[in-house]
Length: 251
Image (cartoon, rainbow, N blue to C red; front, side, top):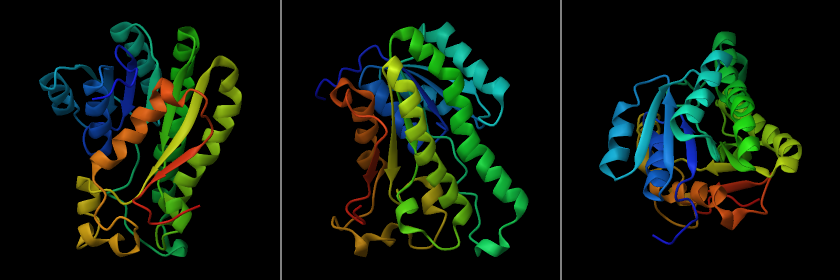
């Protein structure tokens, strides 16, 4: 692999028990970074895969809606890795959500989606940013979704939450730029994770007809964007949203 300048970097990936979170964690480990992975689910398999790939990984039980849990994550990053350079805010409610017309979405479900997908990004970032300030800078990568730009019907709770992530990231970029902390958004299209494959029938064909590149989106198509946004190669890029969807839409 071409040197991305990530060797020795200290990285947190939230929502890393599987899916894109696990893919991000493994990609960073293979690029030479130390990786702390957190999730409400068991992350031991992800940590084991990092070790099998020759990387250095650590696991944490994480509830991104809890200030106490997010503070503990930051404290663990300091204790285990000596600080933090990169935060990937990937944790989100997605695969378990049910589609519904916006008038029919249950209020408790709406509140839970916002708590995890929006508040969770804020919580993790506010406790991790001080570690990056102490390190002289860093990169926060917030995971949104290309569905924000297509307005998928019967999916308002998820689309709204990911739209909020983009808006929040722009504010964070303005506020943290003075400390040389960059904040960018990665917006994947419908990617072939376990959650996506269980979400709809014939998932591998979904959206392919609308794409410029006529095949399903795999996790390996997405991780390079995160590596770039974490690396010195994007040192003057902040407040931006990178869509990776094989050309299904252009903005």
